[in-house]
Length: 315
Image (cartoon, rainbow, N blue to C red):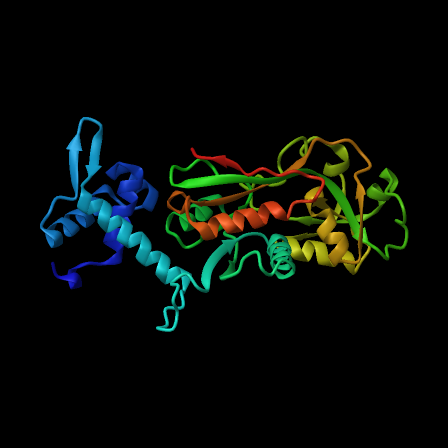
């Protein structure tokens, strides 16, 4: 076998076919033609001089060689993306393991602050935060391609290569500056209606704040929104410097009150709107100890009054 004839793209396609168990499904997943998938598989077969898949009544089955190549590909990609310290002085190859996390700005701040306070909880790891993709489709692709280890956000559509963990779910509250000139100890419906609001403008297919009756409550529909921002942290920070009101999930209340000069109130009207947030990772990372440590840390972040059990969905 001549290693020069190998390319990572062929192995990426092999990985997709093994996960999807179908050339057609793999092609759809990677947005390429089925003939391109077949070409890549044939290229690997010619280089290895061995069959890569066998046909059966249930479709195609990867050979032992294909499974071995796939495992080596996953390991190689993991080493590249994790940026491990592979110096000769390192006795443990998992020292300084990078975990790439894609999430909202506000959650990045919350997670970072928690890791700082609990500095022994994630020993040996470096959290590498990256921008959250602008669509669920792009979020899924980044997890599939191992560009992201943990995706934290609204629930993603079912995907056979992704495992989802429900983290927190709560109602919404209203946040204002601690120095607000008129809203002191209580928030009335008049306060809500007469104030200007900041709205976090999420992506159109996001589900984090679209559960419940948000599209039916008059007080939400008719609020006077003066600023919309795709940056969740900006939506919070501008309220600390102004008279604006913004919505925040109750699971953030303790963190926000301890970290920012703000006050948080129950909403002055009835609504079933809730915020639910999930962690997602690739199925191949199911037994990864570093992913498990991150999930345990995320569970510890929950308010003390809210018992959180990681709800694992393996669709």
